[in-house]
Length: 364
Image: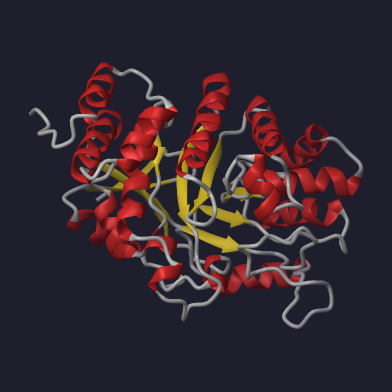
C-alpha cells in the first residue's frame, strides 16, 4: 500500500526508506520539522514490521539501585544524595539480598542495576554487588552499571575501563544498561552532566563490552536544552558504533522528567515530540533491531500508541522504579505481566515475553 504524502519533502525520504538506504542527519531534521507526523509514523511502522512483524516484547525485571550517593552534579537528577545527606543510602550485602527477597517472584528474568557514583565505597563494593546477586540468583541476568559508571569505576580505582569490565564480567555481569548516555555531544554534557563520562568514554565503555562478547543497551535522554540536530548526532554516533561491533540490542529514547511531580505541562515533553522521537529513532537507527518505548517516562497510553510509531518493545514490569520517579514521573512504579499483555493486544499486536537477549519465553 502506498503512503499518502502530505509533505513533498518526505518523498525523497520515503524512497530512501523503501530502498533500505541510510537516512542522513539532514533527513532526520526534515522528519522533525514536517507537520505530517502520520506519514513519519507510517514509514517507521513499515521499517519495524520488516524487522519484527507484529511482535512486541516485554520482560519481567526488577530494578535495584544499590546506592544513591553520588559525586556527579547532573542538572536533571533528583535521585542523588551527597554523603551524609538526609535520604542518602548504600545497601550492603544483607540489605541488598533483603531488598530482592521482598520483591522476588520466580518469573523475574533480569536485575537492572544502576546507582550513584559513590566515592565512599571501593570498586570492590560494585563487584561484590554483582557477585552476591549472581551467587544467590544464578538464573537471573545481571544488567548492571551504565557506561558512565564504568568510566567512574576506572577513574575511582586507578584502572582502565578494559580492566574494570573484565573484572565485572568475571564477577557475573551479563550486559550493560543504556543509561548515562544522555545526549552524546560535548556541548550538552558540559552543561548538563559535566562530572560524568564524555561522549567518547561512554561509547568506549560499550565498545569494550561488545568486544568482550556482551550485548548492551543504548538510551537518549531528550527534552531539555539539546537541539534536534544534537539528538540526531547522538543517534548517528550510536549507529556508527553499531556498524563496527553490532553489539547493541535496543535503543531507548527517554523523555526528560521535570524535577517535581507537580510540574505543569510546559515542563514536560509533548505527546507529539515523544511519538515523533520514537518514529525518527526507528528510521535513523537502521542497524538496531528494536526501539523501546519506556512507559515509565511517557505513560502507558502513549506507550501503546508508540506501537504504531515503530517501537517493538515496551520494557517490563520493573517492580519498583526509583530514578525517574525521583524527578517527577507521574506513572506507576510497576506494571503486571497481565497489564503489559493487555496494552500490547489493545494495539492489535502480539505480546512476546522475552529474556534480556530477546529470546522468546512465551508468546501470548
